[in-house]
Amino acid sequence: MALFERSVAVSSPVQEAFDFLLRPANIITISPPEIGLSFVSAPEVVSLGSVMEFKVLARGQVQHISHEITRLESPDVFTERQIKGPFKSWEHEHRFETDGESVVIIDRISFEPPSGLLGLLVTEAKILESLDDGFSHRHEQLQQIFGNGS
Image (cartoon, rainbow, N blue to C red):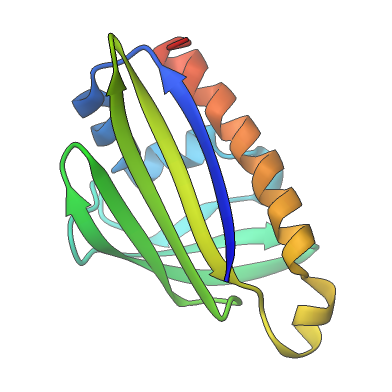
């Protein structure tokens, strides 16, 4: 199982940052435009058990993916797990830790790359590189919205 982890400090009360990331519409605004993220079906605000169906453009292919919120402990952590999609497994933990007057948002993703022919093209190294690029963009956007928490 591969692991990706990145964090960003923002100037925000922890509850405000937590609530912001519970809204799928906000995820679109902070995601890199080139991935073409769009939600097919999602609640306005996710809660425990919510399912989000979305599309992304990955390696020239539109991927249809569904995630379920499997853990939600406000304002500390929530976790989403792939229930339909290209990966053998995918779990994204969003953790929020206060650091003085700022909050550190930690994104931790554990995954198993696809198998079969797709797995030959979409390797762990390529996935980690894409995640690094995507979360660099996402974290820059969060700092623009909330301010740099450093």
